Image 1 (tube, one colour):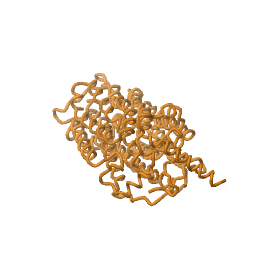
Image 2 (cartoon, helix red, strand yellow):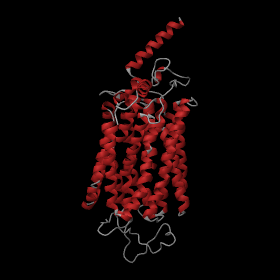
Image 3 (cartoon, one colour):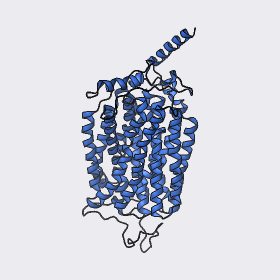
Image 4 (cartoon, one colour):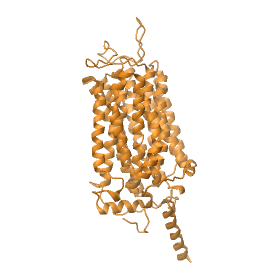
Length: 512
């Protein structure tokens, strides 16, 4: 639906409000219920549920795949535990028994850290090219093939583990290579599908599938490992990814203009509200202005800091639950999943609240993004510090870890969708850039955790939690000082510039 002034909602730097940001007009939008854009968000949600299930299943399965989660004690030596075993489990072996015929491997803590971080070595390589190509061609094929390829490779995990840790490392890196295109492709699609006043809720709904996937995968992985054996985890997760891909390629279109089942009213509303920014960026992108963009670097640094704590917990929390708190495998999976249930609910809710604040003009886009980022990084940092001093208290540890990831979901409507604010047309490419830097902690954090916790002491894990909290605080400060919600001048299209010039001319004529 066109706006009263004949412009798109996206023509940001050309119609400034009091704070130099766009005046976002509201209009009668077609209802979201059963709409094509909501259906797209739901399909993306389930896609990222699968993606994160494929990503985190090794974190829990690792406990069952190795015949000890720590270095083997020397003969006749007593085992020194950081925390006592739960009541009634004093005579329980550290080894998690598997069904007969299921292999286990003697991987030490350092090897496990490398295997858990292997995924991100491949993940780093395809973020930027995936975002660039998705912005040019559309994101459907890249998101769909990214999930499908990762799912097929997951089916080969038991075979790779049988060949040895180096083969498993290579396979996990290949999985990351395939999955690296998924988030940039998602953002490239929303650049064409998400009306500006619905961006927060649509993007956070689709992206929250990651937390929901971790919530489902962690307890189910523990249950499957103990009942069917750890190889079944990878067969079931891989099969789910292949099934999702069928629905994706049948029902999804790159652009509302080419969607076969969208209503005319919804199509016109989306196209007119997004305007020229809702088109592909072509082969040429303004690389130098991007490299010199302070708001873009604010996003990059903040995502790196935030992801350090997120990936630390995502990959290493099951090991902490096992080696320090000594939960059995089924309890381990369930308790490791609780934080992601909270993160899923809060991130989805944050999108609705953020859009409401912007639509009602309570705050500008910049202020909303900063408020949600600041809250979503400082609160988790405080709870991580609390975890480091909870000692062997099972209740306090689980509570603080749950609160940390739950409150972290607030930032889903802040820094993690800010690319589409500053440059909608290049959003997929920018997400590829920011996610590439943001993935570096996914490589380094599990390895660092392995070194810090080599002796499985509370002091080592306290270092892990303090480092993660410090990263969060630093990132929050950088974002608060340097971030912006305005479309950057280098992202404005020629069509928007020409329209702005016409309006200035009409305004000057009226004044004279």
